[in-house]
Image (cartoon, rainbow, N blue to C red; front, side):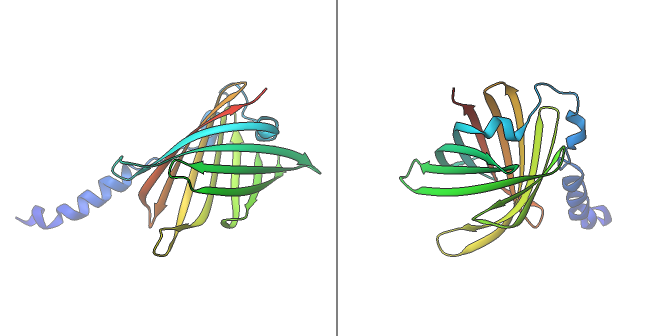
Amino acid sequence: MYWFKKLPYFIIIFTLLGCSNMKIEKFANAKPEFNLMEFFEGKVQAWGIVEDRFGNLRRQFTVDMTGVIENDTLTLEEDFVYADGEIDKRIWKFSKLDEKSYKGLANDIIGEAVAKEQGNAFNMKYKMDLDLGFGELRVNFNDWMFRIDERTIINKATINKFGLNIATVTLFFRKKN
């Protein structure tokens, strides 16, 4: 019976060990090159879903984006339309810190987003207060984007609180001609 008392500790350890800790450097040789500034300059359209931690579909949405580069800063306006009729807007400003790193600011995130690109991958981490209808919850976003071809990016973002995944956002970006 002694082992049974320790079972919760083993479950916690194995759960933590099983968490993904993907590294951006792993994608250094993957093609095509991500190139945040080049891809998001101009018009881009996106389609996405939000799933809760159990895989239940919670929201569907589309996004129309316009990116403008001025003084080495990408301003990316995102206009969201949710399936339930809600409309939202986010404006990102991305500045290069060095050849592979960016600082991102947006009207609805807390502080700065820290972002890196390597090969065909882009990873961005930031904090945001999510509106739950009855209050707000400060969460962490871990965005992973992968460039598939000249006009397509796939994005998977995990949303967590206290290290626990509470939701996943999946997006498909398509650059307009």
